[in-house]
Amino acid sequence: MIFPIGDTQVKGGHKPLFTYTFIVLNILIFALQVSQPGNLICEFAVMPENIKNGTHLYTLLTSLFMHGSYMHIIGNLLFLWVFADNIEAVIGNFRFVLFYLGGGVVASLAHIYLGTPAADTLPCCMPCDGCDGPAMCAGFIPSLGASGAISAVMGAYILLFPSSKIKVLVLIFFTSIYVSAWVFLGLWFVQQLFAGIGSTSALAQQAESGVAWWAHIGGFVFGVAVAWIYKNKRGLNPVIHRDEDRNYL
Image (cartoon, rainbow, N blue to C red; front, top):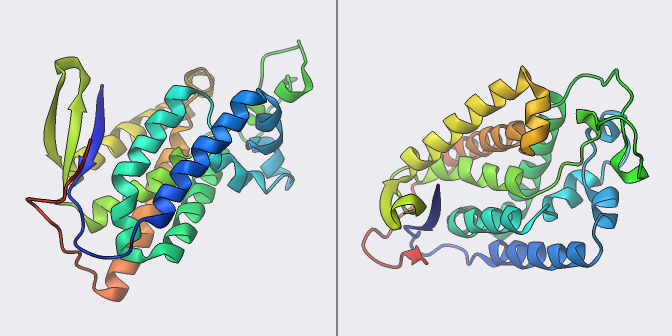
């Protein structure tokens, strides 16, 4: 397994106030989840069928700050910490908030409409009803996590900082290497795309894996699209430090 642990930093720009705010907020909400297991997920996570029926729309936002396990939140916040500060530095604090939340909503919608069946025809066990009946149908499996919004950040990053160097921890060899952002993020997206396409022919497998592949794909595409529009509109050409001020663990 490999994990990003640092990147080349932009020179100047806006302070990453909301990057750090989102990190702290996710940690606090997860701590609250741990103290009240199940209750918050039932109320604030996305249930695809609810969104399709036009109810509980607020969960498109609240679910972005919830996580299912310690590894889930640690992985997400690591990616957020590495990639988000450069994006916020360039587009500004307020725009970053809108971009992050918008990316998360689009990612959730991609999961709902591309990653779950059009309709569940079998009886479904509603997880929040405490039922002991049939297995849960895909449309009623709670979806939560910041990964869709973070995928949008990564999509913007590959367009705005393709030559930035990402420091990657390779666990199997207990070492780290430097990889261009377009290589690391490009390979990441290809992996998500293949997994997402595979999941459409076997939605039960997606349910077992617990990964909303299409949320990652949708968020990433949203990030690329928004960054492309922003870059072309403003003629953006971020200045990169290549030999100093690296944000590494």
